[in-house]
Length: 434
Image 1 (cartoon, helix red, strand yellow):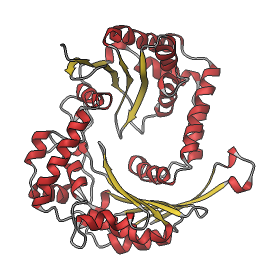
Image 2 (cartoon, rainbow, N blue to C red):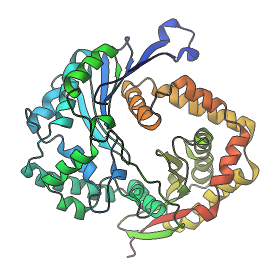
Image 3 (tube, rainbow, N blue to C red):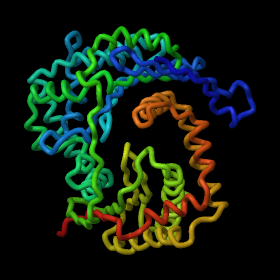
Image 4 (tube, rainbow, N blue to C red):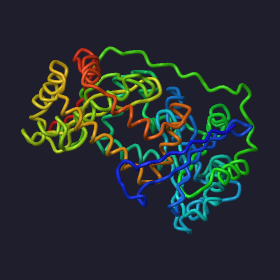
């Protein structure tokens, strides 16, 4: 099965033919269910390729939370034909890059190389994804590494507060689990746990091979068949059903931390990636707290000087999401900062926005998206995530069209729904009392 589409990207931004970028999108599905997606860009000399697996911390339970992220780490700790050092040197020795990440809903192993080394990149990626040995000695060693990563995250309050916030929002649902897991769980993992989880959760039907850059679809398809075509499909051929989190009663949580600055995160359950209000939400988020011209930045930082870092966020997963605001401030300014955030929320909720502000915000949003297309790794990430969330590729032209279609009334409808205090949870980190 194959799908082909030609995308003419960035053509509207420049009248110079040399700056127009022709890219061809193609998708095929191997007999075992692996999806192969490419975006050929012949004017570059690099290729970014990723192996995406539709498995993340959302697919865990309280006892094994953190196992998907731990498996991602262990994939680099030796295979049937490569040692730890061999894996580390495999692509760096040719000037390439190899890495991975785990999220709430998926895991991605990815590489970037010069186009001539694409076969090597796919070889290495397939090796760590399909042939990891999980030696007991390396498991015990990596437990310490990941526990240090967890401690490092705890030492970064402006980041880790979002984990605490999601716990407050989603409660005991897996969407409220931290991707990295807990120290107790990490210490309990054994080789058999990793192998069992792989056997039950990782399958060809959940796997996507995505590549962008100077590579033909036939070339990627041949490599995918060679390295991923022999894996057997799962018995039922179906994805695990993910339960949608129930709306929790809003909570206000306060924690004392060994920090110098107070951190505040407030927000509520929002929309998923397939929600009809996705694009108005993106506009609202950009207008409120994305960049130096945003309302929160201009008011709280520029006018009052209460914060160095203040922003809003809109995180969207398959069927749910979160929307809210974050600020790092002095303890003496916590109440005033929260009050100022709510004043900005209330202005939009009660009065809406002007057409001129809407047009400025949409231009900012579209420009940021288009600039992102200049990064080949970003294009690969778009391919993989678009397939995971929508089952198809959303072209930039389509996305821009949806952004341009957002009206003042659309934004006000989202504000009316989301910017209501009774829906919000608040998490505050305060410095320890001395």
